[in-house]
Length: 112
Image 1 (tube, helix red, strand yellow):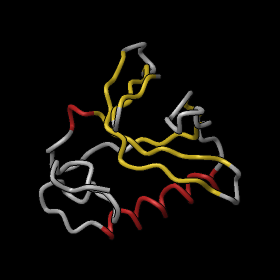
Image 2 (image 1 turned 60 degrees about the vertical axis):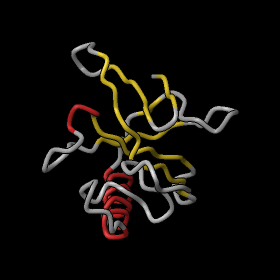
Image 3 (image 1 turned 180 degrees about the vertical axis):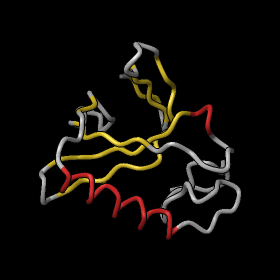
């Protein structure tokens, strides 16, 4: 997996590299892990997008390092709660609720 700005590349189950945009990241004190939610760039602008999630260990520069599979139901519940909260915070019609309250990942004139 590689990352540049809000973009990451991962290898899917078929061995194909998929370019994805990072929707947001968050840290869980409960599970002592960091999580990233992302979606394939090719789906951007579509009515519905396939959001994926993984845990990760941040690199020294703060970027997303290697992705790890989420394996427990409790972790998936946390991720779903965070995604619901994230979607509720967005006012941006331009990006179909893909923004967080601090930074719109789809609109170039928003700043953190």
